[in-house]
Image (cartoon, rainbow, N blue to C red; front, top):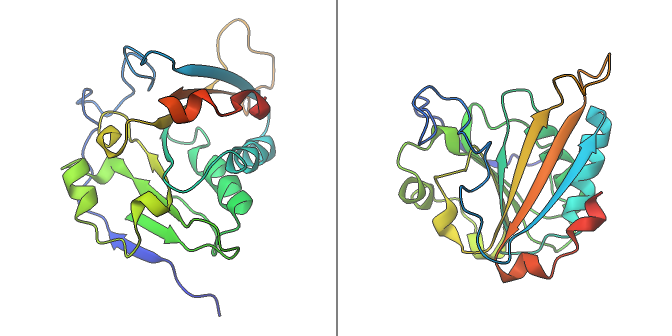
Length: 201
């Protein structure tokens, strides 16, 4: 039987900071003023399976101490991307939506870093509350993926990767393109200046 991942109960949901309605910020999840040296790459993802494969490729760029902030409306594909990321990292257990828990810890099966998957939509206290979760794992030794993390957990590190997933809509969208997503990666800090984000395309 597979060992369960560490889970933490959910408090009542609260809207992400900066938008009391619970919707996306006017910047679409990217920082209002990207830091100097920030790098941005955009990838078009046609299917859910392609989103999962993108997560697997992203895992190849990640290492212990990395913080990834995922932004996108409900059903955009945040968990699908993280599922592929978990497969690429070789962690234990299926990656599922953190809707009913604050965080899950997936230990590595390959002596690599564990994956910490967090739902910051439930974190009313932001960074302080996350530090109080007692995750039984060292965040600097883990890959930390935070859904709805924009405006809440950036203080964990000055070097982070923002990932914004948006549905392809409007006049340029092709017929039957309901599953097509545009995924924008914005790397902040010296760590991401050196990373090969173009390999995600």
